[in-house]
Amino acid sequence: MDQLALLFVLLLGAVVSVPVGDRFGLPAPVLMTLLGLVLAVADFVPNVDIPPDLILPALLPPLLYASVRRTSWRQFTANKRPIFLLAVALVFVTTAVVAFVAAAIVPGLPIAAAVALGALVAPPDPVAATAVAGQLGLPRRLVSILEGEGLFNDVTAIVLYHVAIAAAVSGTFSLPKAVLDLVLSAVVAVAIGLALGWAANRLMDLLDDVTLQIGLTLLVPYASYVLAEELHGSGVLAVLTTALFLAEYATDADDVMTRLAGHTFWNVVDTLVTGVAFGLIGLELHNAIRTASGRWAEMLGWAAAIVAVVVLVRLAYLLPATWLTKRLHAKRDYDEEIPTSWRETLVMWWAGMRGVASAALALAIPLKMDDGSPFPDRDEIVFIAFGVIMATLVLQGLTLPWLVKRLGVRADTGSEKAFERALAVRAAKAAKRRLREIEDVEELPEELSEQLLRRAFDIGARISPDLGDEERREAHEQRARRIKRVRRIQGEMMSAARHEVLAARSEPGADPEIVDRVLRHLDVRSLR
Image (cartoon, rainbow, N blue to C red):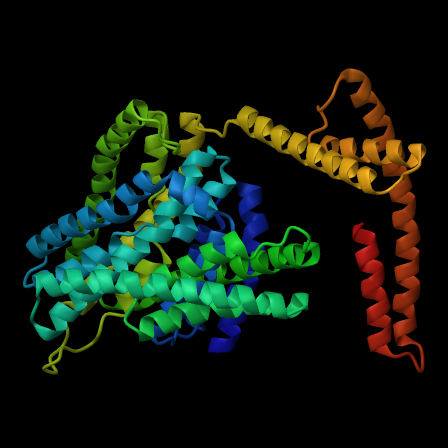
């Protein structure tokens, strides 16, 4: 098996792991990591030959962009305090404690290298957290906080990592310079993110084609990441800024086809790239294992100690941080989503899995120092990092569904349905207001006006069937049954039409391009 065949195996596994995970209640990223482990120990599977400095630029931009598409700027601002406490403060605390313990237990490990280890194992993975949380029916406030933490903690951790690596390689460190680099990195990233978001938004207005618009959304995250890194900014923060800008300003309510096609496209990208990313984690463990040859007991002990530190620090931090946030929330009128019980806090604690960013940063540790000597204890750092990744990702990922079920932490379906009903009412009222505005300008027959008014009510009733009084609901249900029957018959008619047109594609003299154009027309009609 060569490298290309291995990539196709990972892509196939990414597709298959989703239904398998749904069937057995297991997270797809965890299944892909286990698949990578199985492939790593197989003799016929080659070692992965990907330059470490290409892993983050190749995998993170589309994964971050896909995650941001599911959120909004309003959601981040509503949760700014808990996100800051987790994505910034907790990353600093975890880095410091891990560095202290690692320097104490690993003989000869320099402080700068220990800080690099702490930084790369500090951030929980946003993809793993959202993928696992999304399947468990957790309360939306927990999912929002986990998403926000996962998206922003990489920014803090990667900057800390680069500062620590630079100090280790050069042998010098300046705190004022490190703080200045951190601030400049953030400023450059935000500026580039906003500029590219604005430019992409303007360009989309000029591209009057769904395919080109969606293609642009795939290129923009990579452009934002690479340009920010070239200008010594944070690529992760630049991608987040661009994605949030486009989510806020590049949405046209009437551009139905672009929205539907874009949603499908990014679901496919998210599934495939996530699968490959976590499959690579399992495959790369093979290289980490080789470094432990003859030193298993010692290196496993170090890894276990750092795993315990990472897990316990998160718990020790979350309990008082959640209590403090709840106290501040009770005293002031803050519109933010916070854990409401110790059960939800435990779920947040156990959902802190490490993943793609930690693996990529571990592999990106340079081989040599500026003076040409080997980077101190590089093999040990990589082994410990992968020990943390596998312990948190596999152990916590496989047991999180059990913990959620055991603690009884579930989404408040009542409030979700109430919000959905409120949106349905707003949609129906907006349609009725527009109908009245049209009636003021155009003279409509009474029968047509009544028909359109019923359809305005149907807009809300189809979203939330419990709208209106009993008589109106019964009338709507009768119309819905009639419409369903008509649509079934129309569907069979359109199916016959599509089969006939598709059959013409293989007839002598038929122009495939014209056939496809007619077929697309029929497909669009079928969506109405």
